[in-house]
Every structure is written in C-alpha cells, then in structure tokens.
Length: 334
Image (cartoon, rainbow, N blue to C red):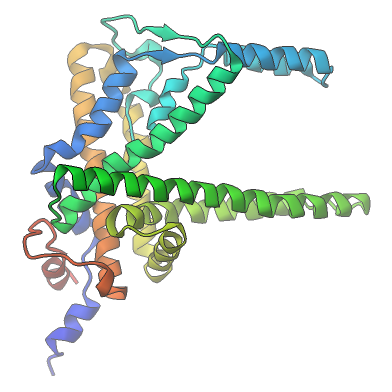
C-alpha cells in the first residue's frame, strides 16, 4: 500500500551532499556574497599591521619586577609576541585564508605599513575595538547569506539595520557565554581548592568535562549563529534553537559541521604552495572565498530545513527563493 504523500514528505529529508551542492549553487549565482572573505584577505595581504609592542613590553616589566618562577621563560614567550599582528582579530569570527598562512610563504609586492601604539592602554583599546569589529564583520557576512537563502529583499537601510541588530544580539551572546563561564569557573575552582586540601585532585575531571563541553559547543555554534542571522533570535533563543536542531539531527549536524571545519581549516595548507606568486594568491583567495561561503550557506540551508520541520512559524520561505529547493530534493533522495 502506498504511503500518503504528506507522510513521505515528513520523513524524507535532503542529503548533506544535496545541501552542500545547493549552498555552492547559491553562491555561484550571487558572487557578491564573497565580498567579506575576499576583502579580509586583501586587508591581511596589503593592509596595516598593528603590533602590541607597548603592551608586551609593559607585561615584561611586570614579570621582571614580580620575581615569578620561571620568569625567564615567560619573558622569552612574551618577547616572541612583540611583533604579533593583532589586526588579524578583524577576521576572528569570519573565515579567511591568509591569516592562516606564514607571512614568509606569501608573495608580497608592497611592504605593509606598521602601526605600533605607544601606550599599552591604547593597545588594549585597539584590541577591544578589533574584537567588536570582528563581531560586526561576521554579521555583515552572515545576514546577506541568510537573506539570499530565504529570498528576503531589503532596502539598503533595512539591511544595515538588520546587520546592526544581529551584531547587538551576537555581542549579547558573547557576553552571556563569558559571564556563564566565569560564573561556573569560580565555584568549581573553589571546590577544587577545598578538595585539594583533602588530597583530592579534581583538575583532571574538570579538564575532561571542559573538553567535552568544548566539543559540543563547536558543533552547536554554527547553528546558534545561523539562528541570529536568519531568524533574528536573541542569545538565549539562539542557543535553544541551535542545540535543539543539533540534538534532533545529531549525525547530519556532525556531518555538516565537520565538512565546514574541513574546508575552513583544511584548505589553507593545501593552498600554501600557490601563495608564492601573484596569480596563485589571487586564485587562492577567490576559490577559498567561494568554497567556504558555499559551505556556510549549506550550514544555513540545513538549519532552515530542520527548523521549518520543528518550528515552521519561525521560517517563511517565499516562492521567490528559488535557491531553496530542498523539499523536492528530499523526496527524490530519501
């Protein structure tokens, strides 16, 4: 006996390979979605390098004056950080190719300008500013991809307001995570200290629990960001939506996130031999942006497809969203 069509549609879901293909297709017909990773890589290539020399030298003086155990090793480690390029923080939440490549392996046709603030407090303010900008860049990147997936058309000012709103929610999420970590860490460390007096070492247990929580967070985080960029969820709702989608689709979620991590972190080492010449740098930047953005779009497509199944009232996909054709794919490739 043939099953009702509605039941077949309920059970059939698109395969991961179909979602990835759909994400890459979406990006190919909307190349402007590649702007953020390409511009970030161009900035890392020829933009200003910011060095935290004043802050590191201040820390070295503090270490030398405090007579810390193994201070020589600490000072040596700090000295190696003097010429660190903190401008790379701009892409902290966004995928880039060149910030993962050694500078000596990269073709250079101009010398980058170097800015080294004279005050450690200025360095700290710059670091804070770069962190805030990196969160904004992530939303400038993610919100338009979400709009393309859902077929949303916004006026320029509407898009700007949506990005700023998503940026605010993202910052609240970061604050919530940091506050939670501090709130949990303090009592756990107090318990560990008390237990240590009795000869019980809880640090190995804490380390194991932390690693487990970190792994789970890595697999949930993309869907949390998707919830912010796609449906305008607040921090708590974004965590709830992301964790629910992950729990309901564990194997598929692990598959799509592993694929995303593979291209983000696996492609730069493969592209490294091409970075020694000008054409290789240009081609590598463009291909990396294309592939990574396609996989990020695939992650959002996966999230939308599963969220529509669970909470259809949160996602409205108009018929004009021609790139979103996962239902028919799910029926064919069940």
